[in-house]
Image 1 (spheres, rainbow, N blue to C red):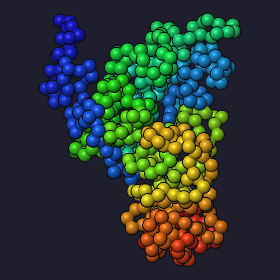
Image 2: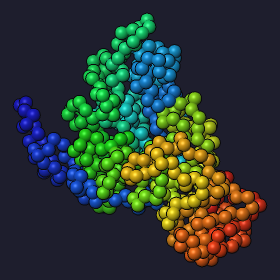
Image 3: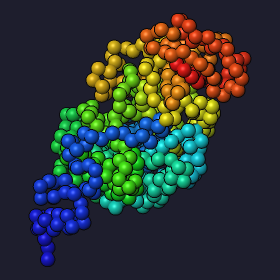
Image 4: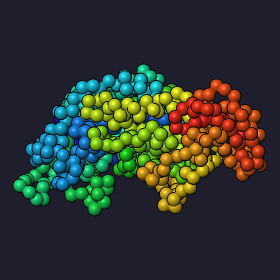
Length: 521
């Protein structure tokens, strides 16, 4: 007997209730979630707090990887190949052919990941000091990086034909690292409409791209008008897509139970996004015997206030110590692998890490994997630089908290345009304006009875820390001992009303920032 939609919903609601799922579908369009500490309401989410494991971890590594990496020509490749004259369109036409004949669907089979070794990658990331690892779950290209139950366009069935999220998860757990997954799915509905267009000039003017073929609507979506707000707008998104988004991401959470979820944007689609967040928190709480240990990193300007979630800033650093923990996500190059990209130096990364931690934040750093699935030689060199620095100085990073001030020196001067007046989004995308730190730039962290003082360059014979002046504005106590991490000898130092002066040994113990462990301050 065929059921009406109302009858089907009623029966499913009854079954959900019998199974102990904490929702009544007759009262809401949002499907059921797992019961637990959080209800699928914003009021319930207000009491959320970031767990201690995240506050202690400080440093995570991310693999922004998928079929858009196959061409090795940068981020948003699946969208931009359908924009005539775009750098990636020109490259695609020259290498593969016109997107009316060879589009993103045809790129997918070329992605083989023949050198992908998640255990080797994870062992290197752990050695480099990462305490958590984040796998790409699904990008705007609507391709799932797990064995998806709801999307035929997934990595277990196409391309490498391996459950990438699952294999990354197992590798992270073997190394004792926390595991996370990023999702960028919601905007795909509008983002991919470039694939429904056609060239505006030239020999193939007006010939539809492959996304216009209804046969591939499960990947490219149906043809529709993109609102004036652009691909990130939630206008004109049909209910069926919102429901599908909810169920897809819920499947990801249910199968892999990640400790951390990351959304590339705000809480999408109202109650659907709120319910997903509550479901994730409850799933992780159940995994840890009731302990509320989950993180959902979110970019919403007004979402992560009064609890709710963890605020994430893309490619930027806030202007002061924030009372609540937060996260910067950035990349050593471009988000998806680009063979023409210029990479950040190890010093740039270390400068950002220390600066972020001093302001109560974490750094999530993307190493974009090439098509093969193995880091290129230059990436390995950057990773090695981080590894060597962490081997000496990680004590001053992990499980620390901010001091009274985050630092001093020229780099503490903030441009008015970047000053955080809203406590939300100011600070995002400001890394491009960062200048290289020097020995004049000082940063602080603290743990137990130790104050860690970072000199962000090698001082000329003597380090001078004005912030530790006796009777100074920071209220520094009388120092009883000073050590230099990585140096076994005794240091000569003096503290007075002008600050703390520390004579440096002849050789620096590590490249980039050096760390003085100060007791008593």
